[in-house]
Image (cartoon, rainbow, N blue to C red; front, side, top):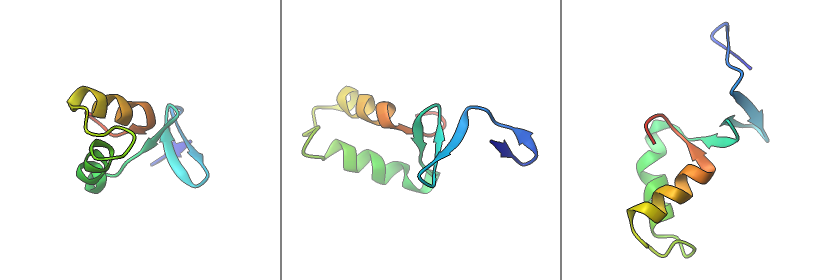
Length: 65
């Protein structure tokens, strides 16, 4: 993928979603909502920070996640 005229090999489009190394990229405006949604999902059932972070890191990407 080329971004701003520079090669960005770790990024690609998948079903119209921008991905980085196989993880869906999340815009900064959605970080808090995404964290909240994962923390309170039925799957995670708010098992704490470590479980929440593990789920986020498995599926999503944003700088400094």
